[in-house]
Amino acid sequence: MGASYSAHPRLSTGLDFLWMNLKDGILGRSYFHLHLVSDATGETLIAVSRAVAAQYQGVASIEHVYPLVRSRTQLDRAIAEIETAPGIVLYTLVDPELTDRLQDACKEMGSPCLSVLAPIFDLFKSYLGTSSTSRPGAQHMLNAEYFKRIDALNFTMMHDDGQQPDNLEDADVLLLGVSRTSKTPTSIYLANRGIKTANIPLVPGVDLPTNVQSVRNPLVVGLVASPERIVQIRQNRLLALNADPETPYVDRTAVAEEIAHSRRLCAQHGWPMIDVTRRSIEETAAAIIDLYKEHRLKFIAHS
Image (cartoon, rainbow, N blue to C red; front, side):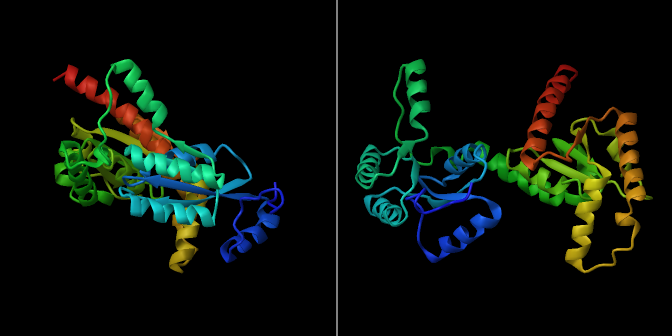
C-alpha cells in the first residue's frame, strides 16, 4: 500500500518525509505521524504504540516522543510540534489541567487524541473503589525494585561471556549457548527485569567451568538456533570485522555439530532449551522468566 498525499492528508511535506515518500514506491509503505506525550520517560507509550503498529502491515509510524512534560510551557512546545506535523496523539499525563489543555488543542487541530492509561485507571477505580493520586513518573521512583534492577545489571555485566565463573551460584539465571545465540542481549534484558543473569559460551574444545554442573540456585537454560541462522549471523559478523570468511566458525557442518553438542549437554543435565531461531529477545526472555518462576517454586519447596 503506497502512500500518497491525497490519500493521506496528514502526511508531512518536510524534506525528511520526501525521502520516505520516495521509498514508498520501493517498500510499499505508508507513513503517519505518531506523537507520544508523557510526564515520565515515555516507555509505556512507546511499548504500547509499537505493539499496536506492528499489527498494520504496510504502514509505519514516524514517532515524536515528548518525555517529562510536567508544565504548561513544556506541553505548549509539544503542541506546537504536533501542529506542524498532525497525526495521532497518545499521552500518559496525570495532571488534569495538562490533560485538558492537550485534548482541547488536539480537538482544534483535528488530531485524534487518547489517554493510554485512562481505561486502566477507570478499571482500577471501579474495582478498588478508590481514586488514584497524581504522581507523574511514580513507577520510576528510586525504590527497592529500582536498586534491585541496578544490582542485577551490575552482576550481569560482570558475568558476561563467561567472566567471573567462580560465583555462579549467586546468579538467578545462567544461560549457555554457542556463539551468536543472543546470550548477551537476553541477559541484559533479564537484568532490566531485576534478574541476575550470567552467560557462558559453549566453545568447541573448551570445557565448561567445573562448577556449572553443580550449581543449585540458578536456573540453567540452553539457547540454541538452527545452523543456517547461526551461520548467517556469523558471516555478517565476519564481514563487519573484515575477517577471513574461510573458517570453521561459519562452516555449516561444524556449526551443526556445535549445536548438536549443546543439545546433548542440556539433555544430559536436564537443562531446558529454548530455540531462538525465530524468537525476538523479548520473546526469549519471556520464556525464560516463566521457567524461572517454576524453578523458584521448586527451589523453595525443596529448601
